[in-house]
Length: 246
Length: 326
Image 1 (cartoon, chains in turn brown, purple):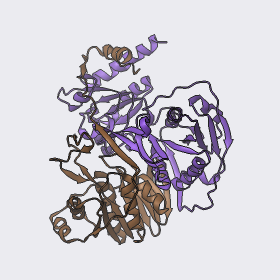
Image 2: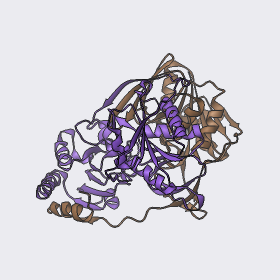
Image 3: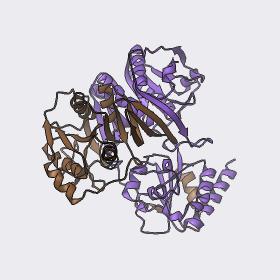
Image 4: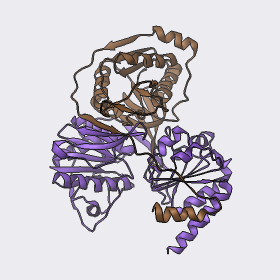
C-alpha cells in the first residue's frame, strides 16, 4: 500500500487576518503557520494507521517555496516515511493540483489523501482536481476509510446523513472529522523527522486560471443588543420587526 | 452561448440549493446577454417548472449509470452537456455534490473556478470577478476568472430564490459514458433528516445548543423551540464528541459551516472554532448564563440567563407570535 498525503501550509486558526500590497496579499508578518488541520489530523493520521496495520509507506507532499520545509518537518514528526516538496509558489488550487497529479502519475500510489478543505482559502478544490487530472475516483468529505486488499470502503458525509462507497483501484479521498484522532508528535518523532528524506522537485508549467484582485475585511459587527431574560417577548419582537428573520 | 446550471436532486426532486443556483445562473446569463440552461439527471419531476426560477431550457439526462453519485461519470456527462449547450459558465451549488463536481469540471476543462461564491460576477471591462469568503469567514476575496470558460459553485442560502410563473422548454440529452471507467460503487445512502426539516447546510433557521444543556436528556426543550420555528437543530463540537447529539448536527470548523438567516446559540460559549462555522449567519442570537461568554461579541442579540428558564419562555413567545400572525 503506497499512500500520498497532500498537506498545505496555513496560518494558525487564531491568526488575526490582515493584508498588504493594496490588500492583494495576505500579511504573513508575525503569523504562525501550521499544517492545515484537516490534512494533519485526519488525512495523515489515518494514512499512518492504515500502514501501521497493513504495511506500506506514507509520503507527504507539499507545493510551495523552501519556507514550507518547516511545516513538512512538522508533519514528518507525526509519522510518514518520506516527503516531497514541489518547488512552486501559487495560491491557486489548479496549480497545486496539477503539480501533485504530474508527480503522482509516475509513482503508483494506491491512495492520495487530502483534508476536506484548507482553513485559509476554504476551496475544497484540490482533491477533485487531482482525481480528474489522473482519471480516478474522488471521494469527498470521507469520515471513515478502511482498506481490505485492493478494496477501500468509505463513509462520506452528505447533507443530513452519509453515503457508503467502495472503490477498487487507485483513488483520491478528502478527509474530515471522524477519520482519525489527532496525534501529538513525540520527541523520537521530532528527532527522526530531521533526517527523513525531503525531495525537492522542480514544478511544471501550469496555466493560470484565476487571480485574486483584492481582499476585504468584513465590516465591524454592530454591538450586541441585550434583552432581559424576563422579557423574551421583546427578543421575538425584534427578530420579527427589526431583523425580519421570522 | 449559455449558462449551464447543474441541478442536483434528492429522490428525483431538485434540491433547494440547486433552485438557488438556477436562479443565480439566470442572473449571470442576463448579465452576459444569454440564457440559462438547467441540467437534470434521472428525475421524473415536472422539469418545465424550473422555468419559474429562471431556466429558459432544461436538459434532461436519463441514464442508469448515473443513478448513484459517481463524480467521475457525472462530470463527464456535465462536460458533454456544457459543450452541447455552448455554455461559457457552469454553475453548481457549493454542497457535498457540487464541491466534488465543480473541482473535477474545472480541471477537466481548464476553466477557472470560484468555489463558494457569494456574489454575482462583476463583468466590467472584460473581467469576471466574484466574491467568496476566505480565512473561515474572517475575510472576503474578490477573484477574477481569467479563462474563457468558467465554473462557479454558489454558497447555499446566499442568493434568495425568486419564483415567477414562467415555464422552461425541456429537451432530452444523451450523454455518452462509454469512454469512462470508474471503480466507484455506492453501497448505501442514509439520510437521517426526513420529516420535512431542511438539512443543516440549506436551513434558513437553526437552533443550536452546547454543553450548557448539561445532558442529552435536556434536548427536548431545544427540539420544542426548533419545532415551533420550523428550524433545524445543530450542536457544538463537545456535545457531538460526547455523543449527546449525532455528528451530522455538529457545526463549526471541524463540523459543517452554515449560513442561515437566524442562528440561535444556546449554552455555547463561542470558541473561535465554533464561530468559524457560523459567523456567516445573517442574525445570531446568543443565550448564555455567563456574561463573559465570547459568543456575545459575535452576536446581534443576546440574553444573559439560564437556558432552562429562558428557552421554554422563548418557545411560548414564538408560539404566540405564530398564533397572532395567522
